[in-house]
Length: 447
Image 1 (cartoon, helix red, strand yellow):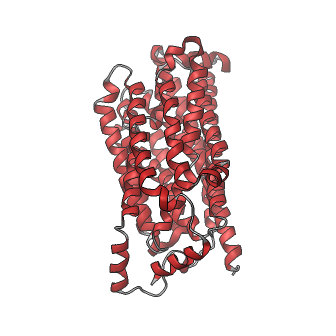
Image 2 (cartoon, rainbow, N blue to C red):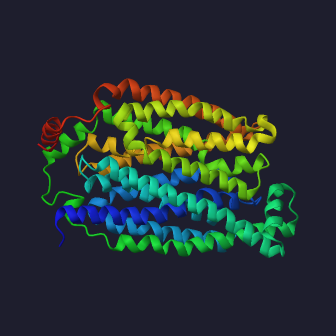
Image 3 (cartoon, one colour):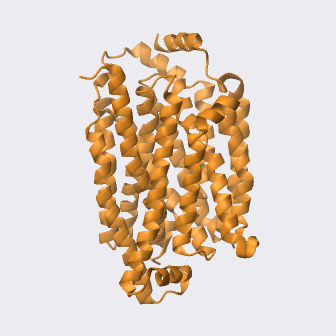
């Protein structure tokens, strides 16, 4: 058996490798799968309800967190790529709308499961000294995978679409600029190209499972071996209700609510603006590249302005760029450049603090309570997804330029959430406590 330090490092890297592949699959889900569903009249409603599907994914991930103390991280993580494979096969092979909706939910659970487990898992295998770096590396490499998934998905769709029609790649790319005017044969080829791509990535998901199988965990990693007493359980639940824990849940809900009105629909919004399919995938890939760059420099930003200022302040900075995206059509022939720039900077500023958002709440609770607390966060985030999906489908997206108006609503929500965070947390949590203070706090929590 490896010593603790080597095992912790090894397990962290196994998670990172698996999460990179899951990033590729996430890019496919949020781009290729969404446009596949939107291309058919029968499943267009599912595409418009993608926030609800993502909400189901969050709930599924939250539920899986609750069984970690019984089964451990390794077995639960292994369910993620398996769920992805099953869901994708069903989506591409079954024509029933109900089954496709269920299958999309299964896929989303597989994707969200990794995201839900990330914080408690890495907190378990990192220290105060290397946590920020490990979290940053994990997140930016995952997003790098999303870039690969999004770009390759768009390329594969256009390539297979052209092949099915006996056209060159360039001719196929031009045709995808006018999806609304497709003939029945062209639409069939377009949907078939999506199925080809989605099935290909079902096989790629096997690569995600391999590093998970090499994780070396022991029961002490995810639970107390010695059973806790009822008195301790009562103390833990009482501590679970302090204002910092509760207010962070509120913040997480608001951010997810706002994000869910726009992020699942990037591909749909850009396509409806008349941007061709390959360019749409390229623009989304560029925004993921922005996330990689900003998350890579996240430790430097946090060092200079603090954790809470990074999390709340940069969210505020991202708001003006949402307005550029929403009004992209006003830029005329420069629309693609303006929208691309808006996507790049919005995503960069909004996601630069992801390592902080993932790691900070884990400091509020004990090791045993981390999966449960992250489960609570994911449950309320799932609620935000569902509410956003319902509001979007039933109201916002039915308005003229509804997908554009959603950016105004999201910007308002971000402003409210950021001010809440800055007011409540800046004084106590902007800078991590000194090492001596941290030791005292940890002792107080355990006792």
